[in-house]
Structure formats: C-alpha cells, structure tokens
Length: 319
Ligand code: SF4
Image 1 (tube, rainbow, N blue to C red):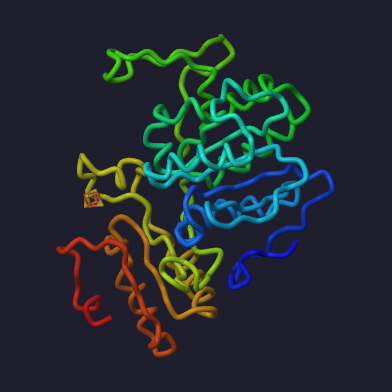
Image 2 (image 1 turned 45 degrees about the horizontal axis):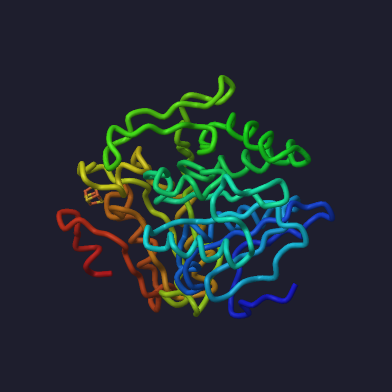
C-alpha cells in the first residue's frame, strides 16, 4: 500500500494483514498535523496496526489511507470536544448513518475512545455503537479478541457480547434518565438482564507508559519524539480533568520505560517532548534530567508539557 505520509519515520513495525483480517479505519477528527501529534492516537494506531488479524487504515479530515476491502470497525480517537462535529462529517463522507439506531448489519460498528469520551460519553452516545472507557493498553486487545469471536453474528448479538467486556460501554443497551431536560443524569439502566449494570473504566497499572510510535516533520510540533513521564497528577486539584480522569498517579519506570524509549527516539530526531500532567513530580525526575544532560544529547531540544513552579530545580533550569 502506498503511504500518503512519506515523511513519517516509524518506530514500530506494522504487521502484514492476514487474508481474512478485520477491516478497520482509525480516525482522528481533525487534520493530519493535529492528529499525528496526539500521543494517544499514535499509541492506539500502532497497537492496532501491530496485529496481523486487523487491516488498519488511518483517516484524518484532510488525508487518509485507502479504505480496507470490507470495513467492519470504524474507530475514532476524540481528544477535544470541538472536534466532535467532524466525526459526523466523516460518517457522512462514507455514507454511514450518523445515528447508531439507523445503522444496519452491513454498516461498520462505530467505536470511540479518548479523554473526551472517557470523561463523559453521554453527549456523544447516540452516534457511537461502542465506547471504550479508560486506558487502552489492555482494553484494546480484549475488544478486538472478543469482536473476532462474534464477527459473523448480527449487529445486535455483537453488541450484546461486547457489552460483557469490562470497560466497554454500549449506549444502545442502556436507558438514561435525567433529573431535568438540562439536568444531571438520574440513572442509567440496562435494557435487559444480560447487560452489566455498571461499566468499569479500565486502568492500566503497568510501569511502562507511552512513547511516540512515529516521528514526522508534518506534526504540529515538527519531528517531536514524545514520552509519557507520568500519568495523572498527585495534586488532585478537584476541578482538574487531567488528574481525575487517569487516576491513580503513575510514574513510568526510568530503567524499563523512559531511558530505553528516549534512547530509541533520539536516534531519529533531536526534539524530545516530556509529557504528563505534572512531569517534574516523577520521583526520579532528576535522574531523568541527568540522562538527557549527557554530552551526546547536547543538540537535543527538550520540551516539558507541564511544570508546577514549586518543583523547578536548578538542574531543570540548567537544562
Ligand atoms: S495537573 Fe495541575 S491542575 Fe491538575 S491536579 Fe495537577 S497541579 Fe492540579
């Protein structure tokens, strides 16, 4: 397949799809330059594209890979609420009914994930068949593994089986009642006895966090290699989605995650992004700085996504 993204340097090896691979489109509802700068999009795409039982094609508002022969799953990574209208434009572009209730057995299942949907799926629930809640590290594989066991069944049977997977919310299998038309949710009730009464957001508890799977000059931060230093934030300010959405606070392992990732990434670029809600609160942040202060990284430009002023050290300022 000829790539529409010739300037990309991949840091993983995509699998060659099997003959009966499930056709899947993975979309970011904004332009390529925005979508490819999302570490979440990169990670999910690489995870899906690493499976030979999937034939994964990327889709952005301005660029796309050719569609698979049979499109069975259509996924969306939603990072910002304002991109939401673009999802409907993408569905219309491919003649997929925008309302979940109007889709039939021949239409792909529309699934979505990302911070916006995990924070509150309800404003978008009528457009999605499947919503993935929480961290994707383990949930994505489970979703695809279960999907393959129901692939030949009716749309309704597929959704009923997928609803049994922890972290998968099937909006059409629940009835939502509100306290008032513009009020809070009063209750969420499954429409049948087989559907779980509660959907539990998934939390990945490993110590290897995310790192870029692709580096490109077309990214919004050109040629940046990103590593996730921490997930969530220990301060837990009550208004803060960045903290509460991804609790508990987890630092990436310096030896198993950060150093190997940074050493690999800096072979292909000299721009490094340290990501997290409060990066400098990694318990070994000084040791991380010592690593990137080595002479071989002198020409590396380092960006830090977020720093609390009371955690700034002389070592950080020197860098
Ligand atoms: S990221 Fe900032 S606002 Fe959010 S909990 Fe941490 S310190 Fe508070």
